Amino acid sequence: MRTQLHHLVSEMARLSGDAPAVTHKNATISYAQLWNEICSFAGGLRHLGVARAERVAVYLDKRPETIAALYGTSAAGAVFVPINPLLKPRQVAYILADCDVQILVTSAERLDAARADLDRCPSLRHVIVVGDGDASAPAAYGVAKWTAVAQGEVSDPPPCSTVDMDMAAIFYTSGSTGQPKGVVLSHRNLIVGAESVSTYLRNTKDDVILSALPLSFDAGFSQLTTAFWVGARVVLVNHILPDDVPRACAQHGVTGITGVPPLWLQLVERPWSLEARQGLRYFANTGGRMPKTTLERLRGLFPSATPYLMYGLTEAFRSTYLDPREVDRRPDSIGKAIPNAEILVVREDGTSCGPGEPGELVHRGALVAMRYWNDTARTAERFKPAPGRARGLCCPEMAVWSGDIVVRDEDGFLYFVGRKDEMIKTSGYRVSPTEIEEVVYDTGLVRDVVALGIDDPAIGQHVALVVSAVDGGQVDTKALIAVLKKQLPLYMVPRDVLVRGTIPRSPNGKFDRNLLRQELQSAAAMVD
Image (cartoon, rainbow, N blue to C red; front, side, top):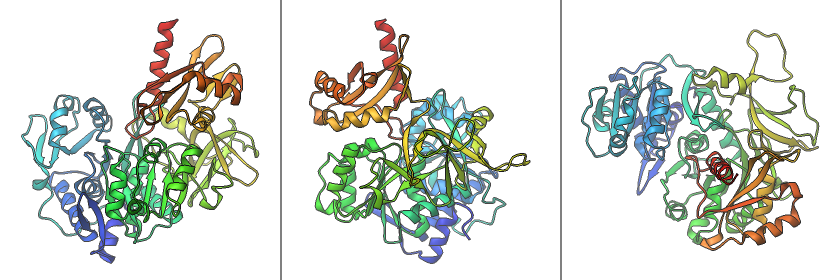
């Protein structure tokens, strides 16, 4: 029975040990080999004295050792904390200190860059260095090579007292304000998510799934769990250039890709050979609504592939997906609840919204995370009793109140309106930035766009755009505004348009709205 995360690999090693599990660059390891690596690392952690529920952070690019460290931590009964390799030392140190990490797995280069900041992490006892480089030991913590820690012990780890409702991982996600917050996930959360997503994606052992998103991003980590649930193969890509993705698809016969809108906006413009395209069975989107024009171009590029439009949040992993058979009729919909979840649309008082009435999306079921790490205030804001359930219970069922505004149609399909904290409040109206962005994309005058609300004492907020040009050309801002004036109500027409060569993204690949808003707000204040 698969009740803990590492059971996904151990079960496949038992059933199909010779089947390919992970490909990195030009090398592929089998499920049996991966399980041996996991067991070896788990044995090394126990030798270092790691106790149940202690935190092990993994700050690496994607490689087999990264997966062995994440799943080996689970096998040792500890809690893994994946850290995006793009984060800078100061950000990494914040995460390590915030959740009292005891062991850090990283590369020599990243350790060298972070040494000064690690002094702010009093709980850190050991650093395990993967790859070549110096492994000397500072006074505050010991440093050891991966080859010295993960060696020798290849037998299955002894059963530990961990159960499916215990902590398995802490994923850090950007907050709307302040420092990142750690979302605590149980083994049950991760396993049910693997089963649910692989079911509606129709994954099988014959799939080759591209891992293009960071493993520190819940959708990126899902590429591992959904593959391991069915015994498929994962191809690890640390893509620096968009051309790396079609190249990997051609080389390895990729059948499934999941991306976020900014990634798809890049990939749709790249040349894809027939060899890169012909094996693709599905492509999926998460992390924001895909522009209709981009979706149409992708469907033209991959005519034999099935599109899956998904919506999720780290606090509940995945919430909805649109049945591919509905894409032509409802391309703007985020679909309905995934298996093992119920999605409610409620008013501020918790009562249910009617069809066509905007309300907050509330997710209940086995995928609801445990809490935020060490943050009772924000946990109480987001994790609250499920609306409409029995009141007065000593242990009420907790649901995730997403902060996302959606609307449900007469047939039960959901449509994303916007974030509570991203909604633009202008001239007495509440405006969804997504609605403006769709119109801008449809003009064909820009490649990327982000719509934001900028504080304005006269009207509350005015609309501003940050855009980038198509294929390195120019953006005719006057022409853009002229078109928008014809297609949008006056209160939705942007006052400012800022053209950037590239629009900054967060470590998870989404457009960094917080940074852009701060820049535009500062610029507006200077003008005033």
